[in-house]
Image 1 (cartoon, rainbow, N blue to C red):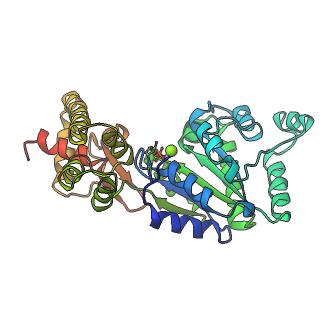
Image 2 (image 1 turned 135 degrees about the vertical axis):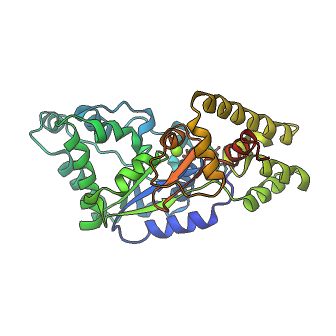
Length: 330
Ligand SMILES: Nc1ncnc2c1ncn2[C@@H]1O[C@H](COP(=O)(O)OP(=O)(O)O)[C@@H](O)[C@H]1O
Ligand SMILES: [Mg+2]
């Protein structure tokens, strides 16, 4: 697998993981910005013997209640398959193994799940390894967190409390949580019980200059590279796609047209979207506004909301260009 750039992000994350755990780390960013890919690369490049990873890909899990969370923790499935085959020889993967009778007691709520996990983390540390718990696509827990009934909600709270305990209080393990759902991040960010317990790290698309250099290094001409970046911006997945074909500019154009027709369709369904798009194009910062249509445009991933930096912007260059065209500004 090809891996481009991210030198700065890699250095930051490597350093972070090599210092004492003291906070939960939320890695966030727009959809397909390369969060998962980046973290995989980072763990691959860290010294193998110093770490043990408990890696949960929640995208593939059905999480609705207490039992499903317990099952997730103690019989981890849903690990990225490519991840396992590509990276397994290079990293230590941990599993929370547990005696069947203990598991039964946990399910009957006669024993606390997180105490069992803490013991395991302490054993790892005693063996000189730093445990790293990774939760990918954490927003899968959102339903339980936001809408769970009175029996379920405490579990997610308990999970966060556990994360706070093992990081900030006991400095026992690192916890990295990844998500592209910014409403979820916003909710967590302003959750008073998590105040002074969390760090936030934005993984954004490549900037234009980086994207251009990547395309040049992959054999595109200067004119092609400039044209592709102008049209699509630095979305890793898009760069990957345009490079697959004979005429990269044509592919970029096709992808752009897809984005544009989706946006046209969307705007047709609700006129208020236009006002929001116009304001954003005029450079207005709409973060925190309650304007009609704003939330939906973030939900539909036309806009990207960053609660940490307090801004709302277009999800991609393609969305921005499409909005300009739509409003007759280009
Ligand atoms: N640094 C990179 N180098 C090469 N390809 C990348 C890079 N980052 C992301 N990609 C490509 O983009 C796709 C989406 O990345 P991913 O890590 O899944 O995004 P996210 O986790 O942010 O949704 C990946 O399948 C991969 O092909
Ligand atoms: Mg991901």
